[in-house]
Length: 125
Image (cartoon, rainbow, N blue to C red; front, side, top):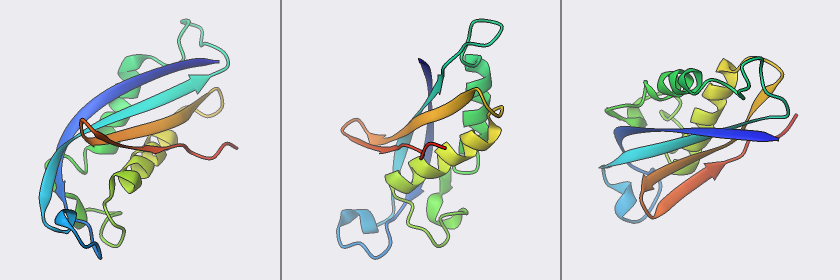
């Protein structure tokens, strides 16, 4: 198996609903996102996927959230904008952009700071 990853950073605020603690108040992060792709075989260029292509897919997945209040952006209008949910949403958006078949998302990591990371691993199949 081959694996690659790419990272991007974006800024956004959020507040957790129905949560007792500091995170229920409006606050922001410089979110760091890492998407890992995997493939059993390389393409005709000897790559899992061109890093520029993955970067563009990630940029598109993140664009609706950058410099926004996540609670005011779909799908977080009714879903808590936790790091875990953000990891899942970004992962699913990148998955829909991948060419069918050979390449799949292995996992998506989202950091809200240097000490706190959430990971989403999509189900196989």
